[in-house]
Amino acid sequence: MKLQIPRSPHPDVIAGLSLLLALTGGTAWIIWQTNHPRLVIQSQPSTQIEQSANTVPSTGPHSTAKAQPTSKTPISSAPTAPKRVPSGEETVTQPIFEPPAQVYWLQARGQQIEMVPVAMSRVPQRTETATLTEALNYLFTHPKLDRLDSTIPKGTRLLSLQIKPDGIHLNLSQEFTQGGGSTSMIYRVAQVLYTATSLDPQAKVYLSVEGKQLNEDNPLGGEGLILRQPLTRQQFVNDYLTQE
Image (cartoon, rainbow, N blue to C red):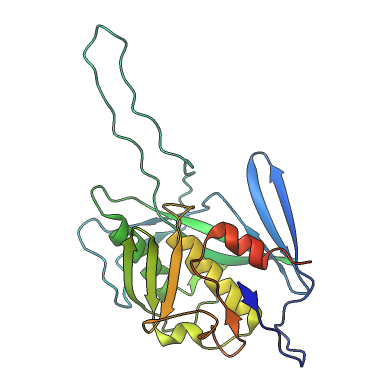
């Protein structure tokens, strides 16, 4: 990703990027140091959202998920292996645990901004496409959740989500490009990227608006944020959280 900085100073123009990656108790904290509040990406969900097991999520503006901000459920970062009884006894195989999708919001804490994951309960036998669709729809229709906020513009809709062999293809509505400066643009891309890859943090994401992929010929918003696709979490860290 590359960021085109206008010649004249803008209140939201990012300057002096540096990366501080601290490992505390096995948890990675990615801190974005700028003239603005720093961005911290938490790896553990702070709350949980209950998904509806009876309604198949749509790409419309309404979500079937219900917020439960008081419930805290830590999420395992990897599936647990099936358990078997000792040899000689009847073998019993337990189902492998599938981590749920996580929705990422923002929370200001002093001079830093934390990107906070909120876990969604996993509905058995629901496809990854349906799970991620509901997670993104919930993000787009909830600009606030308890004390969490979002930089995603009001009215943004998920037009389509397809999981293909080369990655996750997202098509968003035109509202996603509106409002805010460079900082807001990067925050909203981060929210979408991390939510879309919450089931597979290594997945690649192809981001389009109204069917047109965001790239050098089609930058995001008036600030000219150029996305180098496909997007990945590691690439996002390299391109936006580090700079000489």
